[in-house]
Image (cartoon, rainbow, N blue to C red; front, side):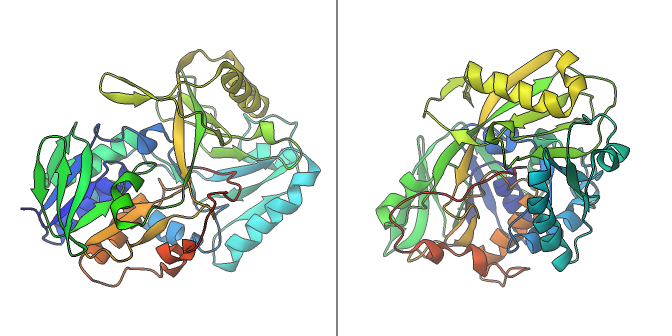
Length: 391
């Protein structure tokens, strides 16, 4: 009987399992598919502080401090690099929004500035098109390898005795008098006194018997990966134009030379299939063409690259585009890390620490009152705030 069952093997679940094991808990980590099979594997994998909601900025800044020593802690490479983030404005009309982003960051001590002309931006990233108006520049942002990171957490957790269970869907949470007593999967029941839900877009079916669904609007993002190119770009880029929503995109060059870039956030038609035991969502031709065009307009050299792969990733967007990091109301022994709205990857190492503290009845390392479940009490519609940055 494990002390804790963690459901979901993305970065949040894997980091939580590792943190719990470090504190001496016995842990079983369960996933319907396997490591990084959904959001954590689909993501751009930016490790970004800039452009976040003010209440989320302190978490992102604390997470980056963890990232800086994470390879050593996990005894494995996460592919983490810290070469900055450029939030691109395509037109002069975009610059006021960039100044607000910089002001929010400066207010909490984040090193960030506005570059108010194309040449200043291209001095940092020469591969960018001269046809841009400016950008915010945060040198302490970066990116990592999503699959390497999640597997590094899992391997470190296994060394501490964490059991991993893959290929089993969780069907229900067992309880007595609204206290968790087990998890029922497609092949077994695992007795436990505590459960962590780190399940991304899924999980409401498990919460339904307790009357505590999380209001999420599932969106999708088209992602393209190219064949490797010579080194051109070390920063992470993102674009969200006030004048042209179709121009929204984000991207980076991986350490292997391949570019990985994404569209803005779109509506999802609900279609998903499985291939080789993993979920697959195919983008429409229109979305794929739009993504290629929008990122190619910002980094023209990408137009000459060969496409290696493309897919869609799903986003569990909450009404305020902020996650829930909290106990599930009225259910003893159940905590949740969901609703990251497309920007949870950076927070993953800190999310693990927060969840481990909540499970064990300890104070979390930072103030998480802004991420309480109760803020959605009485909400009847899942309409969401706009999300223009992800990673």
